[in-house]
Length: 423
Ligand code: AMP
Ligand code: GLY
Image 1 (cartoon, rainbow, N blue to C red):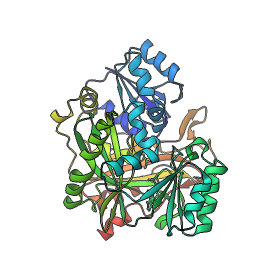
Image 2 (spheres, rainbow, N blue to C red; image 1 turned 180 degrees about the vertical axis):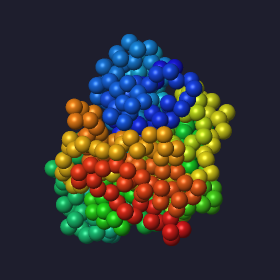
Image 3 (tube, protein in one colour; image 1 turned 60 degrees about the vertical axis):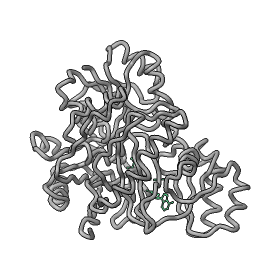
Image 4 (spheres, protein in one colour; image 1 turned 90 degrees about the vertical axis):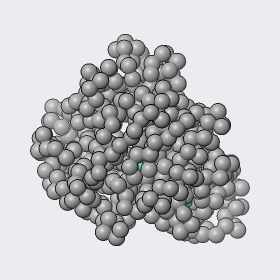
């Protein structure tokens, strides 16, 4: 089989490593990819939003399966265009990817189908939103309706913060058209858990749980980022939580989408908050999480191609999805200054230390190969993942391995997985 992966981050590198393990696959392409993906796949310089070029490339190379890793092309309808050209693709079509593409849509869906989530109101004008704030209780949460690189959520403690937030999202259009509509949501407290799943539109299979660390600084301080590290499984995802979510959230979401005529095939990412009133959905994503994929996929026992094909063919009920009885921790190595301003083009040394080291992975995110060798090319540079017999062992291994690579301005959080000690 020939496989094309669309995307360029640590998630796509983790997907590529899993695809590479499949005996069915002879050749992997990645568009556009990065320096790490380039070691196991042929990277082609086509951007993830260049739909015509991607379709043309997939036809020309007779690609058997396209795996779309990123949210933007999924929400934009890349899978529809590939299918229209007769190419098999893994990921939801546009009318299903709206589950992530519009927060107003996902909130309405949850309300209509009684899926537990925070209370909310949706607004189409800044005036109406500002008026609502007059009688609201704080803190509350403002969410731009559309995609905003994970930055469209503002937690506001006071009315003046909220007024400024409404203005920047709806008037100044900080996130462009994503801010044409606004969801104002009740503030919830509790532990967060990420649960990834495969679905074929009818049945759903849950992967092992994970937890992300979104803030840039230790002890959850600083700005929100795309994710600074993850661990899997989450010790807070107990059997009781699993039972509740199986009864009230997972299948209910798949069925709700089907009832709406929006059959969802692909990965649904459930961002959950474990509140004192039980688990509630914070958000849905229509793809693997990044860096969640970097701790979940290395623990998966199945051939990822079998699972993805079953999602496309509607035969997922025949798959016995299995994970290793171990743990994984991923520590992101970023360029100091991320997520605001940081240097690019800094040479990375020591990558070869990961060669043939079983249980250790150096997933590339923002890297590029040029005449200087492999250099930094983004805010999040590498995801260092290690396996271990349990979470503590995996964490010790991952932090040890963060020392194997060096680049100027290397920055990481030192408390990834600290929550494990409280479990
Ligand atoms: P989202 O992109 O919706 O996952 O939001 C990003 C982050 O904002 C989440 O991971 C939570 O930490 C936080 N968040 C979102 N919605 C809420 C809420 N209703 N209450 C408290 N925190 C929230
Ligand atoms: N790590 C969160 C996300 O992928 O959206």
